[in-house]
Image (cartoon, rainbow, N blue to C red; front, side):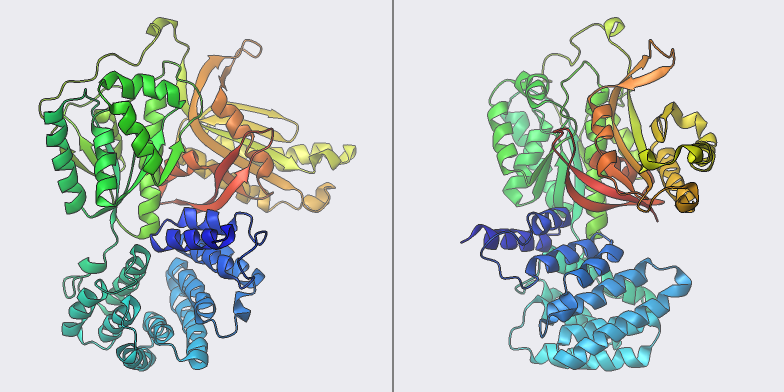
Amino acid sequence: MTTAVARLQRARAALERGDLFSAYDIATEQAGTEQGVPDDGALAYVEVRALAGMGDWENGLRRYAEAGLDRAGDDVDKLALLGRLLKDAAYAAAPELRAARFAQSCEAYAAIFAQTGEFYVAINAAATAMLSGDQERAAGFAEAALAGASAAPHQDYWAAATAAEALLILGRMDEVSAELDRAVTCEGASVSARASTFRQLSALMGKAGIGMDAVSLDPIRPPRTAHICGHMFAADEESEARNAAQIADVLVQERVGAAYGALACGADILFAEQCLVLGIEFHAVVPFDEEDFLDLSVRRGEGDWEERYRRCMARATRTYIASAMRYVDDEGQFAFASEVAMGLAKLRATQMGGEAIQIAVWDGKLSTGLAGTGADVRRWLETGGRSIRLDPGPIRRAAGGTARTPAAERPSRAVRVLVFTDFKNFSKLPEPDMPRFWTEVMGRCAAVLQSRLQHVACQNTWGDALYLALDDVRAAAEALVDLRDILGSSDFGSLGLPPGGGMRIAAHFGPVYELVDPVTGRTNYYGTEVSRAARVEPVTPPGQVYVTEPMAAAIELSCADSFACRYVGRMTLPKDFGTERIYRLERR
């Protein structure tokens, strides 16, 4: 098998299990440069499907046209993807525009059905007709879809799910549940497929005023995503067996499909092992330099924890390095990693349309510090999440602490949102136009920041650039989007700037040193994460706000009601700073 064919298969597999970030990364990596995959749009199809699943229908439509998927001949999957993108646009539209948008999607599906006669195109035409308010047209397409699905020679998931959806639209409620029960036993009943059907049936039931208890959607309900955490403890067969059993029970009872967390000795590793036994995705989050983490959080448990750690790491679906920095006696580094893991769990749940929960092996004692299981539970509850406590029972806690130097000797540390901006083409600005730039552009930036000064812990400027540190994620997200919007209304041509200019805005979230600058006498921030933030700004397009994955996770955890982070992909950062998963910040 060629590398290219294997890559296409991996992209499709990621798509089917609902791992849209990985599907997008695989589909777009070195696209079109390998041998073995015909230039038939297969990778572009996966790319656009992933964009649609992530809610980025605008870029999905753009890529659909660029890749020529509308010229796919008789490839019904590629043709029908246009209707899917228009349907996503309808879901995202303002209420007063939604019916017209669904009608537009219906027209796209209707045209494709007329061309292909495929039953699953007909059912989407039926659904979008119903969501647009055209019940008569919906019933006509539903009858055609039901007839086609029932006569299909291969009764896979989509045939059964189509029949269930058609029966619901036709009001034959007593037959829907049986078809859903049959669907999940059929070939093709992937996580992604079930989640798609769940979303559409939920919307149709809401439109028709059907109570959610009229038909049980449990067979196709998306799996939950879990943030897992718990106490570190020393190796002990009895306590390990007891805790492993209750972890396995709750993972099954809660229908967990993916879990995110660290891999410390004790509860963390038990969680990972049980996930791997049960076929649940496990995503490992390493807080900082791995060798330091092993010393502080794995080897202290004695026994074979390190060997088990390495086995879990080798089999993890994905490994996240929250920060590549060394441990510097800062418990905020652990708290930061927990924040990232929680946000990533919520990002995945949002993709799947399921619930994000927390499962904690915890003695119930609240923590007053920044880090620890009690602190993680407190933070999760603060965001409105549901946390499930598993009593660890008698355990022998791992020896030692995390501090290497006395508190009085340690420099001050904090977790901050770090912002860098730069105005592209500023160097080409004619000298006479600089005062007006200072007023029209930098003056507008100052106005945006003025109303949020209580959250601006540090600010600096030189020429066209800004450097900011903020202590609140929501306030930072509001400021970033407001900066983009207020500068987007500027007439840069009147300022003497050449075309293509504009403000590039980038943000990161991480632990930093908080010190008084010996030169300026003001509070400033230093460290690895400041450098990491600075490397994102040069790859940001003018007029956009790009954020790192830790910042996207923090936004999802703190203010997903107001802001969304759309995945851009893996980007190579300048000055040999490696690659970073980058997101585009938008207001919902």
